[in-house]
Length: 99
Image (cartoon, rainbow, N blue to C red; front, side, top):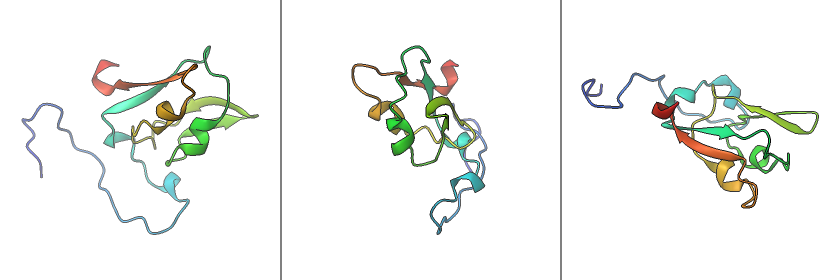
């Protein structure tokens, strides 16, 4: 158990050993993150690099376009923001407490 008096501490779902690939949808891990991706719809060019590199299958794509981010499964790793092309930067990481 953790120190419930510490700033930023909260109860989260238990982690586990994931032995099989492709099962990210079975585990809701969104409560683990301290930062979340925020997508600028006007800036996005739908290159799908965020979708390709997301380790949690959290980028929602419909008809070849990024339509959103599944925050139920996003752990806030920031890979999507890192892989977004430098001139575009349509995805930025924002601290959860600032939302």
